[in-house]
Image (cartoon, rainbow, N blue to C red; front, side, top):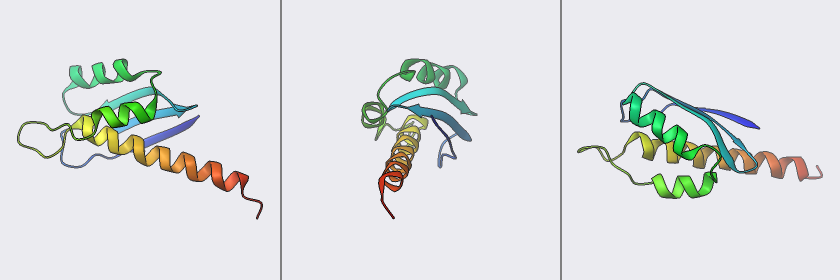
Length: 95
């Protein structure tokens, strides 16, 4: 299981922690921001496909900001999936 930490930009949330196991999201926690809404996001995405959730949340805005905590989480998921993919390919490379 890959555990990830992401520092969002341009939003109230200060930090996002989550895990990805077999392409599924787990243990999503936002630190700072709108506590109830962000806890709800964590519950709603628990065990769901990471790529699908990233696509769903991408581009969501908050007020007049060009991003949101959900959009930043989408960016975090995509970065984590890239790392997972790089890790997998380096383990199969016969160097």
